[in-house]
Length: 261
Image (tube, rainbow, N blue to C red; front, top):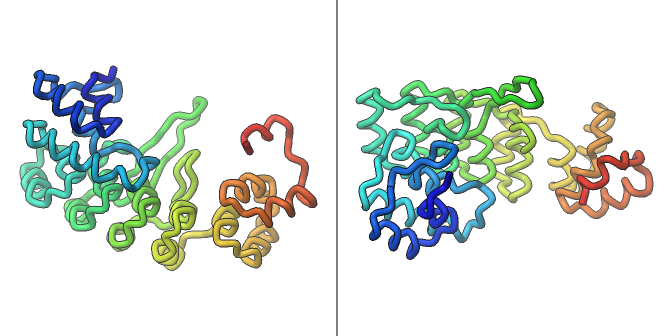
């Protein structure tokens, strides 16, 4: 499980983390996911408010300064070009990994375009492909690095990934597409680049941009997409589409109504 140091990291509480380290907290302790405190500091999750990112970066710096082990993944997350080069040349750390364990994924998330290029040139899978099990079904996941970079608005990273062979039209299970993430967070340049590389819009995309003409064309070509239109409109905050669907859209099954709240 998580140690007090892990919890201090998750809260970005630099003072508490310093106190725990001063009292000999295990800096390499692993939680139930196998993550050390340094891993937690770098992979703090994309839902963290923008203003909190520097606190997690400072936390990572504290841990490294106190002797935390830095592997290829950590060096990629830190943006440490010399460290990444050294570990790539040594060949002792895996260049790919499952999901968030891929060095390319953490580099993309934290916006280190130079590191992304280094990893791609060294043979990293640009889509960071892996599989998950959902209700007994194996589902292939592609595009974690691109999805996170699109979410964060890291245009240079997205460009580097696409140049390195990453697919633009990707979706992450239960999290949507890279296009949706870029538009939801106002990263228009990223979205335009993805469209130019073959990404396809969905109802959520057009609800975010309020492009009713494109939405209508999409629904004509994909009638089944109408079933999820209300969800897309609510998520995008598009009151016009919500009002239209309430008046003219298909009835929402009772078992799905709670999911719209």
